[in-house]
Length: 218
Image (cartoon, rainbow, N blue to C red; front, side, top):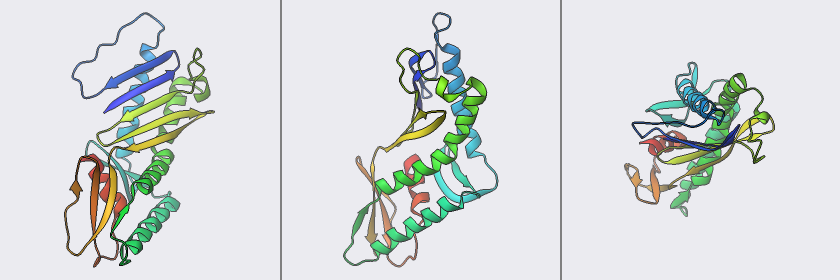
């Protein structure tokens, strides 16, 4: 995982790659070293805290360190929407004329909404407690919005400031996700450019979000 900060307080650009064993951060005073390390710490802290929530629903959307990120039970509207989308996909696949569906955009939309309402809101509160108002954190020299990019194995999450809030700007999935009709159960297919989930027509429903989350991480 790699974390990139842009236009964050006095920082124009800072990268922290967790795949590396050793990190050396040096420089003159007041150039943003403490800002950068504090921001990275808060990002990692919120990723861990989100994965350890209690009283969780069954909507799994995101995996880090082989743990599920899930929605709190109060987010029933999103859970209902996910179920509705999954049912719509299932119904289309039962149509004899449909053999394969590209569900990449649907998965991105669902994950982006959930991450924005859970992880990003918690991160926003942490930043406000540590740094003050979000709208004061943008780089004063460039006058650009602060940007946080978190790169995982199979997807990239980009967060930016919007007035006094943090919001998901974009979520990119590296490989396209398809779901295909089959008559027997099969394991998902991984190729260089796409992931294929298989739907057995005998099944009434498929937990598409949960399946995609596991594929995106493992």
